[in-house]
Image (cartoon, rainbow, N blue to C red; front, side, top):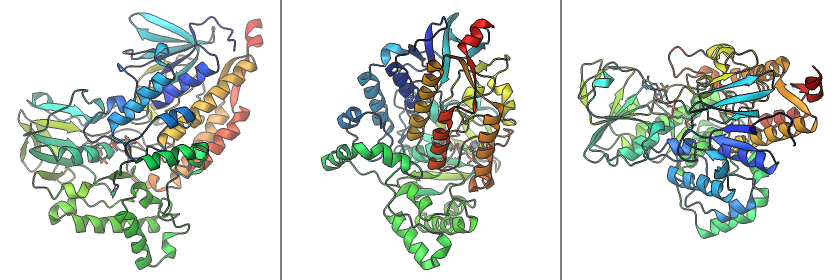
Length: 544
Ligand code: NA7
């Protein structure tokens, strides 16, 4: 501070999810004027939009919480290890009010376009209603799984029942009692919705394109003793989270060697113990090489397939639920008694690889075998145009007037610097954009990025800079690193939204960062020398 340009705000932030709210707080703490615009009518981001039945976080809340304030940590009581969506939303509202952030947030405002003015060194942001605001810094924090994707089913408009997408769920409860329901999609959202809706609906038909490895997790209540322990441990919380391989320092079953070094019997004993203790994600980290060595991965994949055979009584359903790709190559899914749901008489499974949906009629969905599945409600749990979708779908024009979508050529030429800075887009920082880490606790990552951004802004202001922008070399090196770690991992050899394979025609790329959390943070530490940024001193600007 102070800024030099004539602007409405020092910074405009877009999106009132975990990352945008923290960014707003950091900007205000550092003395900048900032305004946050949010499309929804309240804060919450992901947890505002995804109010589908069964929605909950699969990272323990103890670690899926902000780590910057002891007071917030001390005063908030999580009721369970993996709280449900409404509790996480209440937490976000609580933090918003505690930090008094609402006064700088404008709700019900979807930002559709923003433009950099290379003469004035400012961003103009269209805030709707014919109004534009200017800011030196523009910080989209609009999520990376926030643009829903749904299959184009011929005749869907004829359907007489109701349709929903998990990520655009109405804020009034949907009543499934006595209803015939379809869920299309079996990712994290579908699996959670299936386990929940199957308990209420008269009949549930799951339309599955690719089977999932779903690892069991229970959801114990958090008692007073636990809360006391957590409060006492707060001083080391941030350090523990940041030093952990995926930002969840509760992994206590990891054997620090290759799965192939144990005998089959020892290995299966180890997997069985983790399965019985319902330790969720920890299965994938049971040994050090399950995500990097295909042979090691095959051992755990076969173990889980064995569990499906054991749990699911109907052999046809069991066979259709059997995944064959590398476990963890798609984002791991954890749930409580998912496979058991298929033993309920009211739950059917359609394997879309064998019998794809051909059309929708007034009554329901028709599959290639000619069956008409009569339905009252269709739930699309069919995922997202992930990672680039939200930013590419917003007309954000940089110095040369081209949009991010054009710069990235829809993903064919995806390059970023740290996922945060972009050549041609000075003074813009994307917190949840492409190249965001996919294998770490997202909230911990948000904190790392937002803190780097505020440091960078402070640096720019102290140096009297008009512009900071990624250099082509910075972008090149970071993107090479993203591609290198991606190519060396199992994610390269599995179809998933990590590489755009979930959407027909979407170019293949590593849309997210799949390296470990330590390496990622090291890159940010190193980036504090700002050598990968091109800067333009304000004096130079004033004299040119
Ligand atoms: P995901 O993980 O992308 O899952 C989407 C599911 O929908 C998945 O099973 C897809 O099958 C299926 N899908 C996608 N397109 C189609 C079509 N056209 N027809 C049938 N089925 C389809 O999204 P989620 O919402 O579950 O989770 C996203 C992330 O949000 C999650 O990982 C957390 O980070 C939070 P596929 O496997 O692609 O064959």
